Amino acid sequence: MLVVFAFILGTVIGSFLNVVIYRLPEGKSIVHPPSHCPHCGHRLGAVDMVPILSWLVFRGRCRYCGAPISPRYPLVEGLTGLLFAAAAWLHPNPDAGLLLIWVFTALLIALSFIDIDHYILPDSLTYGGLALGLLAAAVWGFPVSWADSWQGALAAAGLLALIGGFANLVLRRGASGRPGYPVGLEHVYLAAAVAAWVGWQWGLAAAAAAVVLNLLLRRPLPLPDALTLGLAVLGVLIASYGVLPLGVLESLWSVLLAAGAVALAGGLYWALAGDGEDEDEEDEEPVAMGFGDVKLAGMLGAWLGFGPFLAGLVVAVFAGAVLGLLLRQRKLPFGPYLAIGGWVALFWGAGWVQSYLTYLGLS
Image (cartoon, rainbow, N blue to C red):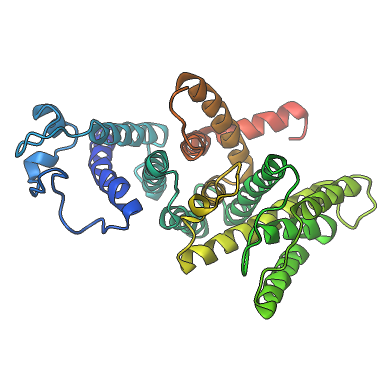
């Protein structure tokens, strides 16, 4: 019965997600005006909005003007219903944990389809999901503990930010990106460089000092990406020889935490400043990865912890390779693949990590 209820609830939530997917990127209210036909503007009644069934009964057309209705609507409803039902089957306890899994699922579906349509991941959903993941860990200890949640959020965001930084460096043939004011990606790389040598707290302090200096100078102070990223790698390498106060794993962990903290804090600044979501689209510089993916990684890390996030990232890369071969004529952003990996890792990621550590003899 729980699985059946979950499917029905999921289709209803999916109907609402269709509204979110359509209206949120355009800056429209998701509650007003009431649902209406996008062609004739006629307000839809209850009989027009029965998930999946209304589209089938009216043969995919508006019953007022006869205009075709996209099959996307029943697709989102059906997908949400199936994933809600699968979650109830995998987590058969009707508790707060299941409710949180459903919310996590709904967020990933909305983010995926918005990214497919507009190549953006709205800050309201990524940061909202990040905050909810941290809250769930703090209050319920679910899906992961509080320590695993905040560290996972920072480390996951830091990992993707640094991957993007190195990829951009190659794409631009060693040239630095445009400096940000008062905060930009160069401060993420600076935090990583300092953290590799003396710890993540000092990395945060260095980035904060650079931002304050920008404000005092009233202009961005350029920091060469090749230099800061190179220093980060060099610090980790030297730590592996035992000549730094940090061990190699502590140095690497500090790099991820510091980079992630500055990336998420900087992204939040630009989100509140009103420039966060369109930054990539307005930037003419070549980029290997949109910054929205970094924010989504932070959200996933808060829900999964860092180890399962890594498992989910592997799934995302594999899914991207497979679907990329199948959909050669359709370019998809990385967000939906991250969402697939995140959902899979929520249920199996921790087990995979434990099995791998056991295989290596580390657990």
